[in-house]
Length: 539
Image 1 (cartoon, helix red, strand yellow):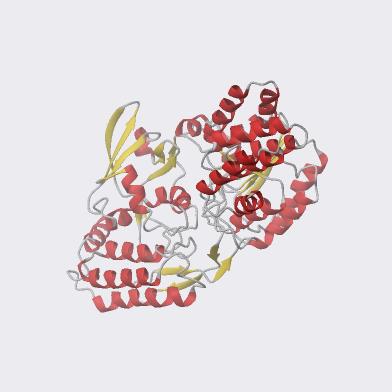
Image 2 (cartoon, rainbow, N blue to C red; image 1 turned 90 degrees about the horizontal axis):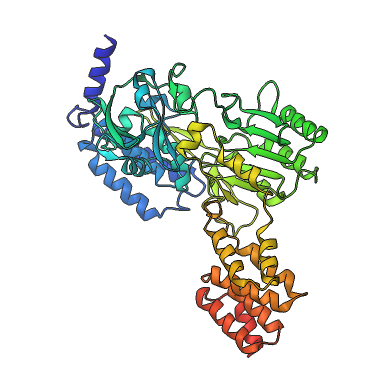
Protein backbone atom coordinates (compact mmCIF):
# COMPACT_ATOMS: atom_id res chain seq x y z
CA UNK A 1 0.00 0.00 0.00
CA UNK A 2 2.93 2.35 0.71
CA UNK A 3 4.22 2.06 -2.88
CA UNK A 4 0.70 2.35 -4.35
CA UNK A 5 0.17 5.61 -2.44
CA UNK A 6 3.52 6.91 -3.69
CA UNK A 7 2.64 5.97 -7.28
CA UNK A 8 -0.73 7.75 -7.04
CA UNK A 9 0.94 10.87 -5.58
CA UNK A 10 3.57 10.87 -8.33
CA UNK A 11 0.94 10.46 -11.06
CA UNK A 12 -1.02 13.41 -9.67
CA UNK A 13 2.11 15.52 -9.55
CA UNK A 14 2.72 15.04 -13.27
CA UNK A 15 -0.69 16.25 -14.40
CA UNK A 16 -1.25 19.96 -15.00
CA UNK A 17 -3.13 21.85 -12.33
CA UNK A 18 -6.00 22.35 -14.75
CA UNK A 19 -6.12 18.65 -15.72
CA UNK A 20 -6.22 17.70 -12.03
CA UNK A 21 -9.30 19.85 -11.62
CA UNK A 22 -7.32 22.02 -9.23
CA UNK A 23 -8.77 25.37 -8.27
CA UNK A 24 -6.45 27.62 -10.31
CA UNK A 25 -7.78 30.66 -8.48
CA UNK A 26 -6.51 29.16 -5.25
CA UNK A 27 -2.98 28.67 -6.62
CA UNK A 28 -3.11 32.18 -7.98
CA UNK A 29 -3.94 33.28 -4.45
CA UNK A 30 -0.62 31.74 -3.31
CA UNK A 31 1.14 33.61 -6.08
CA UNK A 32 -0.55 36.84 -5.08
CA UNK A 33 0.64 36.38 -1.49
CA UNK A 34 4.24 35.98 -2.71
CA UNK A 35 3.92 38.97 -5.03
CA UNK A 36 2.59 41.19 -2.24
CA UNK A 37 4.30 39.96 0.91
CA UNK A 38 7.90 39.63 -0.30
CA UNK A 39 8.20 43.34 -1.21
CA UNK A 40 6.08 44.38 1.80
CA UNK A 41 8.13 42.55 4.43
CA UNK A 42 11.60 42.73 2.89
CA UNK A 43 13.64 45.84 3.88
CA UNK A 44 14.70 46.31 0.25
CA UNK A 45 13.47 43.57 -2.08
CA UNK A 46 14.60 45.58 -5.08
CA UNK A 47 18.19 46.14 -4.00
CA UNK A 48 19.44 43.74 -6.72
CA UNK A 49 16.23 43.35 -8.74
CA UNK A 50 14.14 45.93 -10.57
CA UNK A 51 10.49 46.27 -9.70
CA UNK A 52 9.63 45.96 -13.38
CA UNK A 53 11.41 42.58 -13.61
CA UNK A 54 9.55 41.33 -10.53
CA UNK A 55 6.13 42.44 -11.80
CA UNK A 56 6.82 40.92 -15.21
CA UNK A 57 7.83 37.57 -13.67
CA UNK A 58 4.72 37.53 -11.47
CA UNK A 59 2.48 38.25 -14.47
CA UNK A 60 4.16 35.56 -16.58
CA UNK A 61 3.82 32.88 -13.89
CA UNK A 62 0.20 33.86 -13.28
CA UNK A 63 -0.60 33.26 -16.96
CA UNK A 64 1.27 29.94 -17.11
CA UNK A 65 -0.09 28.41 -13.88
CA UNK A 66 -3.05 26.46 -15.38
CA UNK A 67 -0.75 24.57 -17.77
CA UNK A 68 1.87 23.70 -15.15
CA UNK A 69 2.13 20.54 -13.07
CA UNK A 70 2.33 20.93 -9.31
CA UNK A 71 6.09 20.37 -9.45
CA UNK A 72 6.48 23.01 -12.15
CA UNK A 73 4.34 25.45 -10.19
CA UNK A 74 6.38 24.95 -7.03
CA UNK A 75 9.61 25.39 -8.99
CA UNK A 76 8.05 28.52 -10.49
CA UNK A 77 7.41 29.87 -6.99
CA UNK A 78 11.00 29.03 -5.95
CA UNK A 79 12.36 30.79 -9.04
CA UNK A 80 10.28 33.89 -8.38
CA UNK A 81 11.48 34.20 -4.79
CA UNK A 82 15.09 33.49 -5.84
CA UNK A 83 14.94 36.45 -8.25
CA UNK A 84 15.32 38.76 -5.24
CA UNK A 85 18.96 37.59 -5.08
CA UNK A 86 18.93 37.29 -1.32
CA UNK A 87 20.15 34.04 0.21
CA UNK A 88 17.82 34.36 3.20
CA UNK A 89 14.67 35.11 1.17
CA UNK A 90 13.85 31.65 -0.09
CA UNK A 91 11.62 28.65 -0.43
CA UNK A 92 13.98 26.05 1.01
CA UNK A 93 13.67 22.27 0.61
CA UNK A 94 15.91 21.82 3.64
CA UNK A 95 13.44 23.50 5.99
CA UNK A 96 9.89 22.99 4.71
CA UNK A 97 8.02 19.63 4.87
CA UNK A 98 5.06 21.20 3.02
CA UNK A 99 7.03 20.86 -0.21
CA UNK A 100 6.49 17.09 0.08
CA UNK A 101 9.73 16.10 -1.60
CA UNK A 102 11.05 12.60 -2.26
CA UNK A 103 14.77 11.97 -2.59
CA UNK A 104 17.19 9.84 -4.56
CA UNK A 105 19.73 8.11 -2.26
CA UNK A 106 22.80 9.83 -3.68
CA UNK A 107 24.87 12.81 -2.59
CA UNK A 108 26.31 14.97 -5.35
CA UNK A 109 29.14 17.40 -4.73
CA UNK A 110 30.69 20.03 -6.98
CA UNK A 111 34.46 19.77 -6.65
CA UNK A 112 36.90 22.01 -8.47
CA UNK A 113 37.15 19.43 -11.26
CA UNK A 114 33.45 18.79 -11.70
CA UNK A 115 30.31 17.23 -10.24
CA UNK A 116 30.83 13.86 -8.53
CA UNK A 117 28.82 11.21 -6.69
CA UNK A 118 30.28 11.87 -3.26
CA UNK A 119 28.29 9.22 -1.42
CA UNK A 120 25.31 6.96 -1.96
CA UNK A 121 23.23 4.15 -0.51
CA UNK A 122 24.87 0.69 -0.75
CA UNK A 123 22.80 -0.23 -3.82
CA UNK A 124 24.67 2.44 -5.77
CA UNK A 125 28.13 1.91 -4.35
CA UNK A 126 29.52 1.19 -7.81
CA UNK A 127 29.09 4.82 -8.93
CA UNK A 128 30.43 6.45 -5.77
CA UNK A 129 33.46 8.56 -6.67
CA UNK A 130 32.51 8.77 -10.35
CA UNK A 131 32.18 12.05 -12.22
CA UNK A 132 28.66 12.96 -13.28
CA UNK A 133 28.30 13.49 -17.03
CA UNK A 134 24.55 13.97 -17.16
CA UNK A 135 21.47 13.89 -14.96
CA UNK A 136 18.29 12.93 -16.74
CA UNK A 137 18.16 15.03 -19.91
CA UNK A 138 20.69 17.64 -18.77
CA UNK A 139 24.46 17.68 -18.73
CA UNK A 140 25.99 18.16 -15.30
CA UNK A 141 26.84 21.78 -16.16
CA UNK A 142 23.32 22.47 -17.43
CA UNK A 143 21.77 20.86 -14.34
CA UNK A 144 23.78 23.13 -12.02
CA UNK A 145 22.83 26.12 -14.16
CA UNK A 146 19.12 25.28 -13.99
CA UNK A 147 19.10 24.59 -10.28
CA UNK A 148 20.86 27.92 -9.78
CA UNK A 149 17.65 29.64 -10.91
CA UNK A 150 15.77 28.34 -7.85
CA UNK A 151 18.50 28.51 -5.20
CA UNK A 152 18.17 31.91 -3.56
CA UNK A 153 21.64 33.41 -3.68
CA UNK A 154 23.76 36.52 -3.99
CA UNK A 155 26.68 34.89 -5.79
CA UNK A 156 27.48 31.72 -7.71
CA UNK A 157 29.64 30.32 -4.91
CA UNK A 158 26.54 29.79 -2.79
CA UNK A 159 24.95 27.89 -5.68
CA UNK A 160 28.09 25.76 -5.98
CA UNK A 161 27.76 24.90 -2.30
CA UNK A 162 24.01 24.24 -2.12
CA UNK A 163 22.89 23.53 -5.68
CA UNK A 164 24.15 19.93 -5.97
CA UNK A 165 22.03 18.98 -2.95
CA UNK A 166 18.87 20.13 -4.73
CA UNK A 167 19.63 17.74 -7.61
CA UNK A 168 18.71 14.71 -5.56
CA UNK A 169 15.10 15.83 -5.00
CA UNK A 170 12.80 14.04 -7.45
CA UNK A 171 10.10 16.71 -7.64
CA UNK A 172 12.64 19.48 -8.19
CA UNK A 173 14.27 17.63 -11.09
CA UNK A 174 10.81 17.05 -12.52
CA UNK A 175 9.80 20.70 -12.10
CA UNK A 176 13.02 21.85 -13.77
CA UNK A 177 12.41 19.56 -16.72
CA UNK A 178 15.56 17.54 -16.02
CA UNK A 179 13.88 14.22 -15.18
CA UNK A 180 10.43 12.66 -15.10
CA UNK A 181 9.31 11.92 -11.55
CA UNK A 182 7.33 8.90 -12.87
CA UNK A 183 10.53 7.26 -14.11
CA UNK A 184 13.75 6.16 -12.39
CA UNK A 185 16.50 8.78 -12.60
CA UNK A 186 19.10 8.16 -15.32
CA UNK A 187 22.58 9.17 -14.23
CA UNK A 188 25.51 8.94 -16.66
CA UNK A 189 28.86 8.84 -14.86
CA UNK A 190 32.47 8.53 -15.92
CA UNK A 191 35.46 6.91 -14.25
CA UNK A 192 38.92 6.43 -15.78
CA UNK A 193 37.57 7.38 -19.20
CA UNK A 194 34.76 4.81 -19.13
CA UNK A 195 31.12 5.79 -18.95
CA UNK A 196 28.18 3.92 -17.49
CA UNK A 197 24.52 4.68 -16.92
CA UNK A 198 23.03 4.15 -13.49
CA UNK A 199 19.31 3.93 -12.81
CA UNK A 200 18.43 5.55 -9.48
CA UNK A 201 15.15 4.81 -7.71
CA UNK A 202 13.37 7.16 -5.32
CA UNK A 203 14.27 6.17 -1.75
CA UNK A 204 11.36 7.79 0.06
CA UNK A 205 10.05 10.97 1.63
CA UNK A 206 12.57 13.62 2.61
CA UNK A 207 12.37 14.93 6.17
CA UNK A 208 13.63 18.54 6.28
CA UNK A 209 16.18 19.11 9.01
CA UNK A 210 18.02 22.36 8.31
CA UNK A 211 21.04 23.41 6.29
CA UNK A 212 22.50 19.88 6.25
CA UNK A 213 20.42 18.19 3.55
CA UNK A 214 21.65 14.69 4.40
CA UNK A 215 20.52 14.96 8.00
CA UNK A 216 17.03 14.40 6.59
CA UNK A 217 17.77 11.01 5.01
CA UNK A 218 18.69 7.58 6.30
CA UNK A 219 22.44 7.66 5.68
CA UNK A 220 24.02 5.45 8.34
CA UNK A 221 25.13 2.76 5.86
CA UNK A 222 25.95 4.97 2.88
CA UNK A 223 29.22 4.54 1.01
CA UNK A 224 31.51 7.57 0.78
CA UNK A 225 34.16 8.18 -1.90
CA UNK A 226 36.72 8.90 0.83
CA UNK A 227 37.89 5.76 2.66
CA UNK A 228 37.19 5.87 6.36
CA UNK A 229 40.87 5.35 7.12
CA UNK A 230 41.82 8.84 5.91
CA UNK A 231 40.08 11.49 7.99
CA UNK A 232 41.31 15.07 7.56
CA UNK A 233 40.73 17.60 10.32
CA UNK A 234 37.66 19.17 8.72
CA UNK A 235 35.87 15.77 8.54
CA UNK A 236 36.40 14.84 12.19
CA UNK A 237 33.60 14.87 14.75
CA UNK A 238 30.70 15.02 12.27
CA UNK A 239 27.63 16.64 13.75
CA UNK A 240 29.54 18.67 16.32
CA UNK A 241 28.93 22.40 15.75
CA UNK A 242 32.25 23.43 17.29
CA UNK A 243 35.39 21.70 18.48
CA UNK A 244 39.16 22.26 18.42
CA UNK A 245 42.37 20.27 18.17
CA UNK A 246 45.99 21.15 18.77
CA UNK A 247 48.24 19.54 16.15
CA UNK A 248 51.51 19.19 17.99
CA UNK A 249 53.57 18.18 14.93
CA UNK A 250 53.23 21.64 13.36
CA UNK A 251 52.01 23.64 16.38
CA UNK A 252 48.67 24.41 14.74
CA UNK A 253 45.58 25.18 16.81
CA UNK A 254 42.68 24.19 14.56
CA UNK A 255 39.14 25.34 15.38
CA UNK A 256 36.23 23.72 13.57
CA UNK A 257 33.38 26.22 13.77
CA UNK A 258 30.39 24.80 11.91
CA UNK A 259 27.67 26.94 13.48
CA UNK A 260 27.48 30.30 15.25
CA UNK A 261 25.16 28.74 17.80
CA UNK A 262 24.96 28.01 21.50
CA UNK A 263 24.98 24.44 22.82
CA UNK A 264 24.10 23.45 26.38
CA UNK A 265 27.54 21.97 27.07
CA UNK A 266 29.90 23.51 26.37
CA UNK A 267 28.19 26.80 25.66
CA UNK A 268 29.55 28.93 22.88
CA UNK A 269 31.24 31.19 25.41
CA UNK A 270 32.76 28.25 27.29
CA UNK A 271 34.05 26.78 24.07
CA UNK A 272 35.89 29.92 22.97
CA UNK A 273 37.22 30.44 26.48
CA UNK A 274 38.75 26.97 26.29
CA UNK A 275 40.16 27.69 22.80
CA UNK A 276 41.92 30.83 23.97
CA UNK A 277 43.10 29.11 27.16
CA UNK A 278 44.75 26.48 24.96
CA UNK A 279 46.29 29.21 22.79
CA UNK A 280 47.70 30.89 25.91
CA UNK A 281 49.21 27.72 27.31
CA UNK A 282 50.85 26.20 24.21
CA UNK A 283 53.20 27.23 21.42
CA UNK A 284 50.90 28.16 18.54
CA UNK A 285 52.54 28.83 15.18
CA UNK A 286 49.23 28.81 13.30
CA UNK A 287 45.74 29.59 14.58
CA UNK A 288 43.13 28.32 12.10
CA UNK A 289 39.38 29.04 12.28
CA UNK A 290 37.51 26.82 9.81
CA UNK A 291 34.21 28.37 8.65
CA UNK A 292 33.82 26.33 5.46
CA UNK A 293 30.78 24.42 6.75
CA UNK A 294 29.34 27.30 8.79
CA UNK A 295 25.94 28.45 7.52
CA UNK A 296 25.36 30.91 10.34
CA UNK A 297 23.42 31.32 13.54
CA UNK A 298 23.52 34.29 15.93
CA UNK A 299 26.00 37.08 15.14
CA UNK A 300 25.98 38.09 18.81
CA UNK A 301 28.50 35.33 19.50
CA UNK A 302 31.03 36.80 17.04
CA UNK A 303 32.08 39.54 19.42
CA UNK A 304 33.89 37.25 21.84
CA UNK A 305 35.84 35.60 19.00
CA UNK A 306 37.11 38.89 17.59
CA UNK A 307 37.86 40.36 21.01
CA UNK A 308 39.70 37.23 22.07
CA UNK A 309 41.99 37.41 19.04
CA UNK A 310 42.65 41.15 19.27
CA UNK A 311 43.58 40.74 22.93
CA UNK A 312 46.33 38.31 21.88
CA UNK A 313 48.86 40.07 19.61
CA UNK A 314 50.86 36.85 19.62
CA UNK A 315 48.02 35.21 17.65
CA UNK A 316 46.86 38.23 15.68
CA UNK A 317 49.67 38.24 13.15
CA UNK A 318 49.83 37.94 9.40
CA UNK A 319 51.10 34.46 8.63
CA UNK A 320 49.84 33.06 11.93
CA UNK A 321 46.08 33.74 11.95
CA UNK A 322 44.05 32.03 9.20
CA UNK A 323 40.33 31.86 8.41
CA UNK A 324 38.99 29.16 6.05
CA UNK A 325 35.91 29.99 3.96
CA UNK A 326 33.75 28.44 1.23
CA UNK A 327 30.50 29.06 -0.60
CA UNK A 328 28.72 27.61 2.43
CA UNK A 329 30.12 30.34 4.71
CA UNK A 330 26.91 32.25 5.19
CA UNK A 331 24.83 34.59 7.40
CA UNK A 332 26.31 35.01 10.90
CA UNK A 333 29.47 33.25 9.70
CA UNK A 334 29.72 35.86 6.94
CA UNK A 335 29.48 38.59 9.57
CA UNK A 336 32.32 36.92 11.46
CA UNK A 337 34.45 36.90 8.30
CA UNK A 338 33.77 40.61 7.78
CA UNK A 339 34.69 41.37 11.40
CA UNK A 340 37.89 39.34 11.25
CA UNK A 341 38.81 40.90 7.92
CA UNK A 342 38.26 44.42 9.31
CA UNK A 343 39.76 44.14 12.79
CA UNK A 344 42.42 41.43 12.71
CA UNK A 345 45.41 40.39 10.61
CA UNK A 346 43.74 37.20 9.44
CA UNK A 347 44.61 35.66 6.09
CA UNK A 348 41.54 34.20 4.37
CA UNK A 349 42.12 30.84 2.68
CA UNK A 350 39.84 28.58 0.64
CA UNK A 351 36.98 29.72 -1.58
CA UNK A 352 34.82 32.88 -1.67
CA UNK A 353 32.02 33.27 0.85
CA UNK A 354 28.38 32.48 0.05
CA UNK A 355 27.11 35.94 1.02
CA UNK A 356 27.73 39.34 -0.50
CA UNK A 357 29.12 41.97 1.86
CA UNK A 358 25.71 43.67 1.81
CA UNK A 359 23.08 41.08 2.63
CA UNK A 360 19.72 40.68 4.33
CA UNK A 361 18.67 38.22 7.02
CA UNK A 362 16.61 37.50 10.15
CA UNK A 363 13.76 36.16 8.05
CA UNK A 364 10.07 35.88 8.81
CA UNK A 365 8.01 32.97 7.56
CA UNK A 366 5.09 33.59 5.22
CA UNK A 367 2.91 30.47 4.93
CA UNK A 368 1.07 30.29 1.61
CA UNK A 369 -2.67 29.77 2.22
CA UNK A 370 -3.35 27.04 -0.36
CA UNK A 371 -0.19 24.95 -0.81
CA UNK A 372 0.98 25.54 2.77
CA UNK A 373 4.52 26.19 1.46
CA UNK A 374 6.69 28.46 3.62
CA UNK A 375 8.35 31.49 2.08
CA UNK A 376 11.16 32.92 4.19
CA UNK A 377 11.51 36.68 3.81
CA UNK A 378 14.41 38.70 5.22
CA UNK A 379 13.50 41.50 7.62
CA UNK A 380 16.85 43.14 8.44
CA UNK A 381 19.71 44.53 6.35
CA UNK A 382 23.31 43.73 7.27
CA UNK A 383 25.90 46.20 6.04
CA UNK A 384 29.70 46.08 6.21
CA UNK A 385 31.63 48.74 8.11
CA UNK A 386 32.51 50.61 4.91
CA UNK A 387 29.40 51.77 2.98
CA UNK A 388 31.44 51.60 -0.25
CA UNK A 389 32.01 47.88 0.23
CA UNK A 390 29.61 46.20 -2.20
CA UNK A 391 31.56 43.08 -3.06
CA UNK A 392 29.53 40.08 -4.18
CA UNK A 393 31.66 37.94 -1.84
CA UNK A 394 34.72 38.07 0.38
CA UNK A 395 37.51 36.55 -1.67
CA UNK A 396 40.30 34.45 -0.15
CA UNK A 397 43.83 35.78 -0.16
CA UNK A 398 44.87 32.20 -0.92
CA UNK A 399 42.51 30.36 -3.23
CA UNK A 400 42.48 26.66 -2.30
CA UNK A 401 39.52 24.75 -3.76
CA UNK A 402 39.22 21.01 -3.28
CA UNK A 403 39.45 18.52 -6.14
CA UNK A 404 37.82 15.11 -6.15
CA UNK A 405 41.23 13.43 -5.93
CA UNK A 406 42.16 15.49 -2.87
CA UNK A 407 38.88 14.63 -1.15
CA UNK A 408 39.32 10.95 -1.96
CA UNK A 409 42.85 10.97 -0.53
CA UNK A 410 41.86 12.86 2.61
CA UNK A 411 43.98 15.86 1.57
CA UNK A 412 42.92 19.33 2.66
CA UNK A 413 44.29 21.86 0.12
CA UNK A 414 43.52 24.81 2.39
CA UNK A 415 45.50 23.39 5.30
CA UNK A 416 48.32 22.42 2.95
CA UNK A 417 48.41 25.96 1.57
CA UNK A 418 48.68 27.32 5.11
CA UNK A 419 51.48 24.95 6.05
CA UNK A 420 53.36 25.86 2.86
CA UNK A 421 53.34 29.57 3.64
CA UNK A 422 56.59 30.74 5.14
CA UNK A 423 58.63 27.88 3.66
CA UNK A 424 59.96 30.13 0.86
CA UNK A 425 61.21 33.72 0.95
CA UNK A 426 58.55 36.35 0.42
CA UNK A 427 58.03 37.41 -3.19
CA UNK A 428 59.00 41.00 -2.43
CA UNK A 429 62.32 39.90 -0.96
CA UNK A 430 63.08 37.71 -3.98
CA UNK A 431 62.26 40.50 -6.45
CA UNK A 432 64.33 43.01 -4.49
CA UNK A 433 67.37 40.71 -4.51
CA UNK A 434 67.11 40.17 -8.28
CA UNK A 435 66.59 43.86 -9.08
CA UNK A 436 69.54 44.94 -6.94
CA UNK A 437 71.64 42.28 -8.67
CA UNK A 438 70.64 43.75 -12.04
CA UNK A 439 68.65 40.70 -13.18
CA UNK A 440 65.43 42.49 -14.08
CA UNK A 441 64.47 39.80 -16.59
CA UNK A 442 64.37 37.12 -13.90
CA UNK A 443 62.54 39.50 -11.55
CA UNK A 444 59.85 40.16 -14.16
CA UNK A 445 59.41 36.47 -14.87
CA UNK A 446 59.08 35.77 -11.16
CA UNK A 447 56.27 38.33 -10.75
CA UNK A 448 54.37 36.99 -13.76
CA UNK A 449 54.78 33.38 -12.58
CA UNK A 450 53.49 34.32 -9.13
CA UNK A 451 50.48 36.10 -10.61
CA UNK A 452 49.65 32.98 -12.67
CA UNK A 453 49.48 30.66 -9.65
CA UNK A 454 45.96 29.34 -9.01
CA UNK A 455 46.21 30.33 -5.36
CA UNK A 456 46.39 34.00 -6.47
CA UNK A 457 43.14 33.87 -8.44
CA UNK A 458 41.59 36.57 -6.26
CA UNK A 459 44.67 38.33 -4.91
CA UNK A 460 47.49 39.16 -7.32
CA UNK A 461 50.97 40.11 -6.11
CA UNK A 462 50.52 43.59 -7.57
CA UNK A 463 50.12 45.22 -4.15
CA UNK A 464 53.14 43.43 -2.69
CA UNK A 465 55.38 44.61 -5.54
CA UNK A 466 53.98 48.12 -5.28
CA UNK A 467 54.80 48.16 -1.57
CA UNK A 468 58.36 47.09 -2.39
CA UNK A 469 58.66 49.94 -4.88
CA UNK A 470 57.61 52.55 -2.32
CA UNK A 471 59.95 51.09 0.28
CA UNK A 472 62.86 51.44 -2.15
CA UNK A 473 61.83 54.94 -3.25
CA UNK A 474 63.55 56.63 -0.32
CA UNK A 475 66.75 54.59 -0.41
CA UNK A 476 67.31 53.58 -4.04
CA UNK A 477 65.20 55.62 -6.47
CA UNK A 478 66.53 53.88 -9.59
CA UNK A 479 65.72 50.44 -8.19
CA UNK A 480 62.26 51.67 -7.19
CA UNK A 481 61.57 52.83 -10.75
CA UNK A 482 62.62 49.41 -12.08
CA UNK A 483 60.26 47.69 -9.63
CA UNK A 484 57.35 49.92 -10.63
CA UNK A 485 58.13 49.31 -14.31
CA UNK A 486 58.07 45.56 -13.73
CA UNK A 487 54.70 45.93 -12.06
CA UNK A 488 53.26 47.78 -15.07
CA UNK A 489 54.48 44.99 -17.36
CA UNK A 490 52.94 42.31 -15.17
CA UNK A 491 49.69 44.26 -14.65
CA UNK A 492 49.33 46.65 -17.61
CA UNK A 493 45.58 47.10 -17.07
CA UNK A 494 46.00 48.41 -13.52
CA UNK A 495 45.84 52.17 -13.28
CA UNK A 496 47.49 51.99 -9.88
CA UNK A 497 50.73 50.48 -11.25
CA UNK A 498 51.08 53.28 -13.83
CA UNK A 499 50.18 55.90 -11.25
CA UNK A 500 52.89 54.62 -8.88
CA UNK A 501 55.43 54.59 -11.69
CA UNK A 502 54.51 58.16 -12.51
CA UNK A 503 55.08 59.17 -8.90
CA UNK A 504 58.54 57.57 -8.85
CA UNK A 505 59.53 59.16 -12.16
CA UNK A 506 58.34 62.57 -11.00
CA UNK A 507 60.31 62.21 -7.76
CA UNK A 508 63.45 61.50 -9.78
CA UNK A 509 62.93 64.57 -11.98
CA UNK A 510 61.85 62.69 -15.12
CA UNK A 511 58.91 65.00 -15.86
CA UNK A 512 58.04 63.88 -19.41
CA UNK A 513 58.22 60.19 -18.52
CA UNK A 514 56.09 60.82 -15.45
CA UNK A 515 53.43 62.60 -17.55
CA UNK A 516 53.38 59.65 -19.96
CA UNK A 517 52.90 57.20 -17.07
CA UNK A 518 50.08 59.24 -15.55
CA UNK A 519 48.36 59.49 -18.94
CA UNK A 520 48.60 55.71 -19.26
CA UNK A 521 47.05 55.40 -15.79
CA UNK A 522 44.08 57.49 -16.95
CA UNK A 523 43.83 55.47 -20.14
CA UNK A 524 43.27 52.23 -18.26
CA UNK A 525 41.51 53.80 -15.24
CA UNK A 526 39.63 56.90 -16.49
CA UNK A 527 39.23 59.59 -13.86
CA UNK A 528 41.77 58.10 -11.41
CA UNK A 529 41.94 61.02 -8.89
CA UNK A 530 45.64 60.73 -8.01
CA UNK A 531 46.65 60.69 -11.69
CA UNK A 532 44.40 63.66 -12.53
CA UNK A 533 45.83 65.80 -9.72
CA UNK A 534 49.40 64.77 -10.57
CA UNK A 535 48.99 65.83 -14.19
CA UNK A 536 47.59 69.17 -13.10
CA UNK A 537 50.69 69.76 -10.98
CA UNK A 538 53.11 68.72 -13.73
CA UNK A 539 51.61 70.91 -16.48
